[in-house]
Length: 336
Image 1 (cartoon, rainbow, N blue to C red):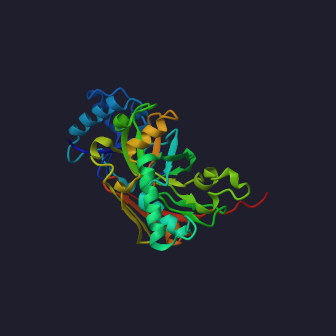
Image 2: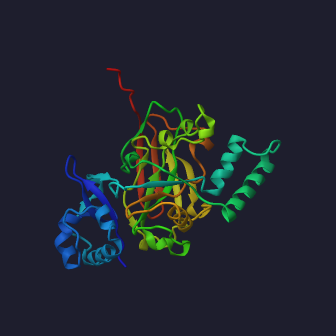
Image 3: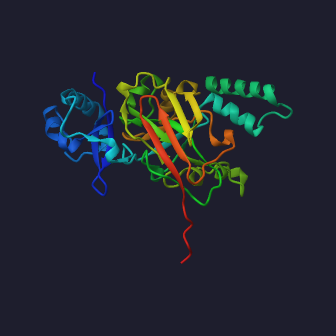
């Protein structure tokens, strides 16, 4: 089966358009529309990726047939490097994030922060944390919270560091894009509801997560997670049929060329299917919704190094492409 991905692009200042991507070759769907109709398409020439996801099972079959008709060279193709790359789903209606979902990541944080029973340290504290994670994986539940879609930005757009935080941190994650309405889905059927996978970076303001003014409130995900540009997404959506082992993908993030995260999605405590089962037991998922499935070890908290103006973040997940984001400090508006 010939592979492809989907994306959303524009020429500078132009209208956004959905496209079929073959490697770094971009074929706009509006230009392919006559051929798509011959393959059975019912979508309009201006359909977005979000539109296609509303009837994903049917539209995937059409896209597969269309892909088989695209020759090695096509007069309509554009190089991705010459286009503005937008989030492939522009925009999801709902974004959900699973926290503390990589075993080594949580163990490292336990040691870094010295959180644990009094008197435990070093190897003993590590053993306690590892046992706790094994118990949680066997008998616990995922920890999921919402993030606002307005935080989403493109895979090559700048990450704006607001003046409200001094500890902005990176969190590279495997993103799951939903392709069917999902409510009370059993784990065994959960992956049938996945349209595809992509890269996201769940940028976080570490110093704004905990509420210190009223500690009983616990965590504050609004101010710590949802600033504009705090979720680079893309560059493309890779259909699930081309990702044979989502629980065995290498995930790598470099900061100014130095590797900070390098792990496998196999280290997840709760796999993609279990997350979908848990989430849909409590809420309704719609086609196009995005689940960020957790970040592996190697965040800024572990390295005691947080994002600064001018930093360059290079992110890669095996088979899903790569991101590059430059950090810029957001200026505080002057009072009127």
